[in-house]
Image 1 (cartoon, helix red, strand yellow):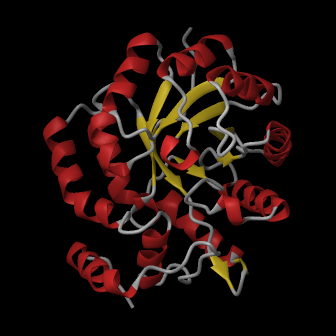
Image 2 (cartoon, helix red, strand yellow; image 1 turned 30 degrees about the vertical axis):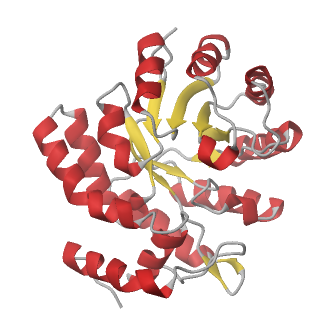
Amino acid sequence: MKKETKLRGSMVALVTPFSDGGVDYDALGRLIDFQIAGGTQALVPCGTTGESPTLSHEEHDQVIEYVVQRAAGRVPVIAGTGSNCTKEALRLTYHAKSAGANACLIVNPYYNKPTQQGMYEHVARIAEVGLPIVLYNIPGRCGVELAPETVVRMYDEIEQVVAVKEATGRIDVTSQIAAACDIAILSGDDSLTLAICSSGGCGVISVLANLLPAEVRRLCDLIASNDLDGARRQHLRLFPLVRACFLETNPIPIKAAMAMAGMIRDELRLPMTPLAAQHRPAWAALLKEFGVKTR
């Protein structure tokens, strides 16, 4: 069953900038404009990189509203509205739809470790909202994995399921899904974007794009044009920065780099803490080598 979707190419897992404990909407607005100017093809607020577990429900709603309003239809907004409580995910998704989001990102229910049938029914209920769904398969964060067979079943049987953000770290998963259906597969790991897109994927929801949107867009464009040599060179060029994005738990390193570049304040919410001092010189040196101006 083929479903039309424009969710492909270079997308950004937006950080949530903070200032003195609150959401820094001035910085968020600048980041959105910077992303669109850099060629980012969709904005993904309130996901893992956006520190959604530390946002209050009111803040979560307000961030999605703000991103939709600031984007003003220039690019799609895929709102993170997942939860390990189906009732809560429904409320968040209804709000995102009313705010004008184009799709929602639904993470595997975490901590309570549902069965495959439980995850299927969870997504089926959220689909009642009527917003296109991007599944978010990240077992390392959730403690539970959507089996490829369940992804295919959801795509075949739930009309609103149009894409999956694949973050298992295993290329065989991408291949198995792509061989069974034509769901849009989006890389959830910057380091695997080339490999995933070479195995049936069609884009990335990127952490690195927060800092270098034009460079990630270039990688996606090279892949889309079937320029394997060019895509491989771009992948290898970005790879040291991609690795640095995971010196510590995401989004700690990317926020540190963005702060070094003067884009945001280096502020996170507990239990996340700023990047350890021993990692900062190497990060700064990488940014300088790549030509990123730092303060």
